[in-house]
Amino acid sequence: MSFRVNKLKKVGEHLEVFDHDEEMLILKTAKEYCPHYYPFVLTLFRTGLREGEAVALMPTDLDVRSRYVVIERNFTAGQFLSDSPKSGKRREVDLAVDLVVVLKDHMALQEAEAALTGRPRSKWLFNTPQGHIIRSNNFRDRVWGPLLKKAGLRRRTIHATRHTFATRLIMAGAPLTYVQKQLGHSSIQITVDSVLPLD
Image 1 (cartoon, helix red, strand yellow):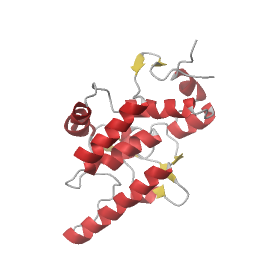
Image 2 (cartoon, one colour; image 1 turned 90 degrees about the vertical axis):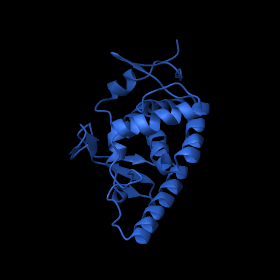
Image 3 (cartoon, rainbow, N blue to C red; image 1 turned 180 degrees about the vertical axis):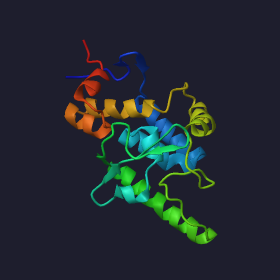
């Protein structure tokens, strides 16, 4: 079964995805113009994590040797850090080889910066340049929006990276059960409802 890339549908919501060229342009632009956030943006595209799940990651959640990350927290409602992801279940999400390389370099840089400044390393895998946790509104307005504008692309929500990831998996022939597991959907029906097969 094949699926239309630019026509995802979910009940009551219009979903959008980035095509391959757009994704590559965003990543290239992020690497050049906001390199501090490049690992975070790449992680969103390569894992399909919810923004709050990515924000709540700690270095100890990563297993770079086996290439997966454990999702067991979600940063939501401004300052509230829940003890579980949205689905309420801990899950393991596979990591692409290129993402693992970037994350290893990112963590090494964090360690070096902490040693040079004498400040303790942030407990979060991703943070602001000032070392604070990433907050959705600030990231959207100060990083994501300007990033898309710099790339010459129309505005789309950060959540579009999640639907982009799901679309890539499905078009590559991944089983729906695998896609469900990676995304942390509570049921296979939610995964099925998130895509629209070609007529």
